[in-house]
Amino acid sequence: MAIEIKSPTFPESVADGTVANWVKKEGDQVYQDEIIAEIETDKVVLEVVATTDGVLTKILKKEGDIVQSAEIIGEFDDAQDAKPKNEEKTETKEEVILEKQDLPKASNKKSGPAVKKIIAENNIDPQSIKSSRKDQRITKADVIDHLESKNKSTQHEDVQSSIVYSSRPEKRVPMTRLRNTIAKRLVAVQQETAMLTTFNEVDMLPIKELRSKYGQEFEKQHGIKLGFMGFFVIAAVQALKKFPIVNASIDGSDVVYHGYKDIGVAVSTDRGLVVPIIKDADTKSLPELEKSILEYSEKARDSKLTIDEMQGGTFTISNGGVFGSLLSTPILNAPQTAILGMHAIQDRPVAINGEIVIRPMMYLAMSYDHRLLDGKEAVRFLVSIKEQLESPERLLLNL
Image 1: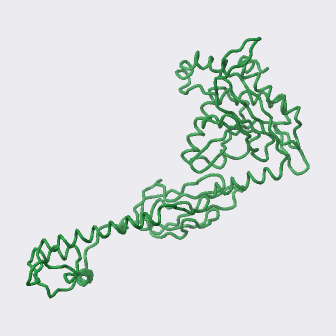
Image 2 (image 1 turned 120 degrees about the vertical axis):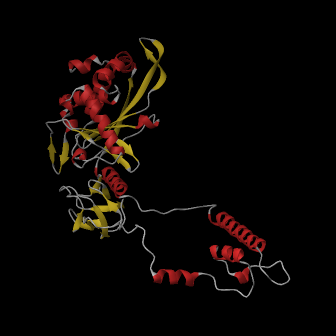
């Protein structure tokens, strides 16, 4: 029985999608819950899976085609006797005749049975073979010399082609739907907001000592490593409580104050930057935050994030330090008011209590929308994060 293959049902925020990849081809055997195709939207890649065993019989939407929510994109047959196209076929009389017709025609040049077999197997025109004998009889050595000469000629042509056409190669490919969306949003943010960036630096020694002292016990107790991002999320949440305007957003001529703290954590993937959202981060403990961060990072890199896991967000944290970035200006994740940029930890000389010491320092950068946030509030917000990270006990005491 023929069964329709439909694209996933998109949420209201997603207008349409693009067929990114057909994992299976027409005639392929498919099994229940096996991935058949992938649909790329502006935010995530959605998988189309088989509802039962069968054979993919028809592809209605090719790769690159635009599809709507729950649109029919193909068909497959779940009949027990359905057979894949790639199964071996029994040769028919017509196919045998055609194969014989494709063989080289008989030649006036004489040759033995063994030589004729080699000529037929290599699909050689006997007239093109130069005989070494006076009677023009073709020998096995003549055929071998002909094949070697042909191979050398082909290799020479390939080398010449490589020299001529590969010295300055170019490749033009269409942007992925996600990359195109990212590009448009980044340009729109810079055109539609009054974005500024303020900087500070934080001494990471207290956090590093805390991780060194309790890291193994933390991992043993909670089954996850104690990272840096969890501390930054908690510090951001506490700062957002002090400065609720940073957690707000502009909607037309209104300011929307959000009574929840949904923190976006930017993750770099092969397809581009995605920002999964840790919802209600203010209600989660450090172990819960670390588990959420790890889970979302793995799902993002495997293209397993759902649209719901990427919707919303009131504040974003981006960590360019994992790639070695020392300082940058992060771009706002609209319609949010601010974004925090983490960077690489680097040992630097700093003056503490009148003495020069070497400390593991990190530059912090916070970009913000000046339409809603004044410089004074932005600087104080960033200083609050700095103070909490340099005195981790403040995180426990909500100071």
